[in-house]
Amino acid sequence: MALKGNLRDFSTTQLLNLINLARKTGTLSIQTDKESAQMSFREGKLIYAFMGNENGNHLAQILQNSGKLSSEQAQVIQSHAEGKSDKEIGHLLVTARRVTQNDIIQSVRQNVLDTVYKLFTWGEGVFRFDANKLPNSGYITIPIDLESVIMEGSRRLKEWEILQEELPDLDVTLRFTDRPDARLRNINLTVEEWRVVSFVNPRNSISQIAKANNLSDFEIRRIVYGMLQAGLVEFVKPPRPAPEKREPSSRQQKAAPEPS
Image (tube, rainbow, N blue to C red; front, top):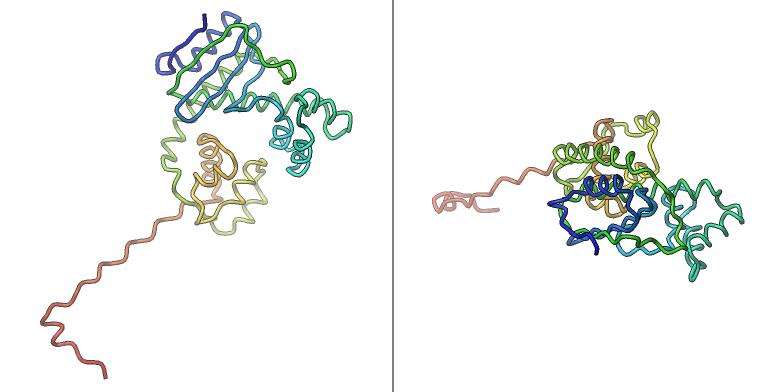
């Protein structure tokens, strides 16, 4: 019988602790009003995770997100990948020397972790654990110790709470401070941070930048907060409302000079 419940009563942290201590094998599914996710485990170790309706055949996208493939290369691979599993695609890429086996392992591992860390901030939703249900054999699975995942996820949850206080509104816009080029030369930015920088414009809200770069609320808040602290950007102040124009009184209208 599957284990079912609600995240209001049993958090992601508690679920992972239970799976770790009991060395469970199976798949945990979480569903909210807007999102869904699945995590798979073997003897208490995290081996696979994905968001939404992903179901394999997305290795090229993972490698693109990690910077191992360009967007053009990923598109070409995906167009020729129909009917092939992630393992088969990975084998072809390694044979063709497009990437190394370590590139694939590290990229898939990071993708799994990024997915799971997002779930720590979910406070609403229903969950279901199906014992002994595992991913298709064509998926690439990487065993990851849950102790480190739980510790990092808990740290990120605290960071998330702080970021929500610092950046409560994602509909505000940003602009660069004075001499941004000089500041950028002295700061090492990640690929994701550079992408966000390229969208900084008073016409783009933070939420729009997040959507354009496929970033979660947590990820965009963390990046923008770092840029604010580094003095790269600042909030665009809303324009002051124009003073209301008062209609002249009837006496003033009579006294007003006529145009020549």
